[in-house]
Length: 546
Image (cartoon, rainbow, N blue to C red):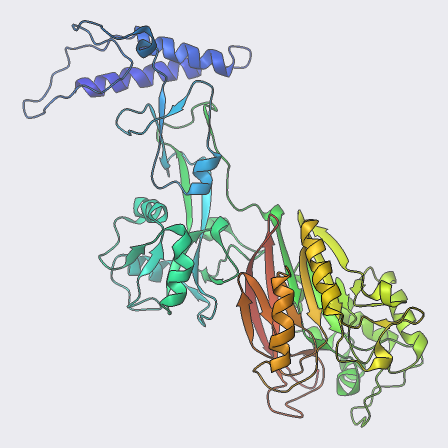
C-alpha cells in the first residue's frame, strides 16, 4: 500500500506540473525541472493501512526521500530523472521513433517507471497498422476478423486451420494485449528477419507483420474486405490496427511518437497491363457499341491506380479504314477516335515498344506521339530517333521516384528507330543494365518492359529466362513482359518481381489461336516511401472480342 501511495503522489505531482504548462507559463525544460523538484519534496505518508496478507516491498531508486528513514542518497540520486517504460509490444520502427522530452530517460523496469508507453485503447497517441500476409504463391485473397480471432482462440476451422500464425514477439505482445493470450499452437514467434523465409518454407503459411515490414514476396490478404495496400483502405473498419499511448494519458508532449506507420500521401499504385491493339473485332465492337465499351467492366481497377500503364502496339492514323473483324493480314492501324477508350480508363503512361507501330504509314507514329502529348499521356519505348526511344520516362509521385524504360528485341527490323528515323527502341541489354544501374544510383525505382519474342505457353522460354533476370539483378524492381498474348509465369529475383508475360488487355483473341488467350493479368504494384512493397495480381477474362 505504501508503494501505491508513492505512485499517487507521483501522479499528483505530474498533474500539477502539467496543469502549469499553459501557453506562456513555462517551457518543456522548466516543466521537467519542476516535475523533478516535486518528486524530491513530496513525502509519502507512512500511515496508510496495509492489509495483513500483503508483503510490502520498497521500490528501488524512486528518487523520493522515504519518511522515517535516514537519507543517505547522494544529491545526484535525489534528483533522479523520471523514467519512461517502453513495452515489449512496441514494434521496432515505432520504438526507434519515440522521442522523450528533455530530462526524461527510458526505464528498463515497468515497476519503477513513472510513465508507461504501451498498447493503450484508452489513450491512443499512435495507431500502428499491421497486415495479414502469406507467401506470394498463395491463392486465398481474404478472411474476416471473426475467423482470425477464432483461430487466435483455437476455435477456427477455416482458412488457417492446422497451420500456425507466424509473427514476431513484439507483434504477439501487441495483439495479446488486444485479444488475450492465443491458444496453444495457434501462434509461433520468429525474429523479424526469419518470418518471410520460414513462411515460404512451410506453405501454406500465414503471418501478421507491421506495415513497414511488407515485402513484395508477401501477399497481403484483405481482412473484412480491407487491405492496407489498397487506396480505398478504411482504417476505422480494419481490425489489424493497434493503438499505442501512455497508460497515464497525455503527458503534454513529454513523450512524442509518430501518429501512424501508414501515410496515404507516401503511397503510389502503378497498374501494369499487357497487349492493347484496338483493331479488327475489337475496333468493330467499339464502333458498334461505343468507344469505351471494352473497358467498362475493369474501369474501376484502371482509374483507381495512381499511374495506369498500357502497351498500345498500334499507331493512330486519320486515314485508317473502318475496323474489319475478318481482316486476314497483320498490317494494323487505329482510328484517332479510339483513343477515347484510353482516356476513359485513365491511362497515364503508354508503352510504345510494340511491333505493329510502323505497320501503316511512317508518319502515323509521329501523329501518335502528338496525340498522346495532347491528351497529357506520357510515353516511352519509342521516339523520333533511337536516342529518344531509349530515354527513360521519369516520374515522381508522393515522393516515389519511378523510371519506365522498355525495348523491343523481337523486331521486325523496320519497327526499330535509327539515328535518323522514328520507331521503337531496339534492345541493347548491356546498355540497358548500365542505364538501370545509373537510375538506381539517382534514387529511381526502374520498371523495365520488354516486347519479347512471342510464345503461346505459360512457361517462359529458355531465352526469356536468360534475358529477364539479369535486368532485375541490375536493379530493375519490376521486369514486365508486354508481348504476351498468352499469360505467362512469374518469379522473384530477391525482392525484384519478374512477370514474363501478362497476356492481352484490349485485343480480340477469344481463345484464338490457342485456348488461353482470353486470360489476362493486370499487375497492381505498390510503392511506399521510396520502396517497392507489394504486388497484387488482378485477373480477367476477355469477353465479346473486346
